[in-house]
Length: 348
Image (cartoon, rainbow, N blue to C red; front, top):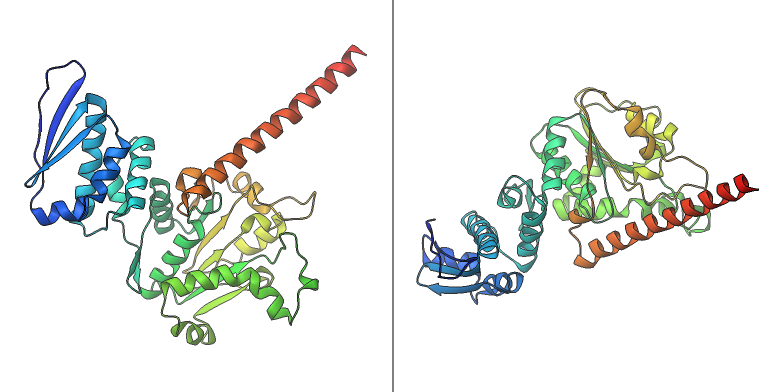
């Protein structure tokens, strides 16, 4: 790609020309009906874009032209790697370009983990990419962040990848059976029926990543095991990729029990959201205290994701951010009341 920059006669204005290798590449990058072009114009209202042959000209305020040029360069790289440039991908690029101080967003969005059933699973944010790379480098990884940040889904993809590459002999998926408001005893059916709803999200992710017809066979052979955390007690898990999901609902004792199941040739990923603890009041969350306990322990990594890494519906990220602000304001109000109470006692 060759760019040229030419001032257009007014202070603070600039123009650039981006040349594509072919008309086909331009169509793949900008869309058959210039959908991407329309989205880019919407993101930079002061910038004008014009297509002529294999060239795209950009003109407007210098700062916006520079940002639009960088965005289009990333779009062009994605197109060259046969990555579909959807409106969602464009939105992710824009967010990463605003928040990412180093690296290229296209490097994140072209990092393939797993291809299954006509779709490719890959990280979609820089923090997700760092998390995936941490899983490759460390034996135990903690993925901590709010709902929708892909922490469990990406861990599942890495587990399936490790199994397919024969790096492990089996996948073990587990969750604590702690209720979010309901009680197991009041649910209908057998013990298996009662526990199944807690494990359903893990089954759903598996079905996204593997041939559904093969999953019962692999489970019957013990190659894939999905079980409540209580079933891990007393075991040593060798040559396995082990995922503990919803780890905020473990007690410190349960977390210790789980981590000490690690056997030779195994890897562990522990995921959870410390803002959604469903344990009875007064019970400490094992996920909240484990970072202090394991601080400095070699080959253990803590990866943190936040609202900017939410890859569900756009509103999920907004909801996570709104709740974080509400929690902070509530804590601030509580601190103010306590400080006021202390001041009143001192005066008294």
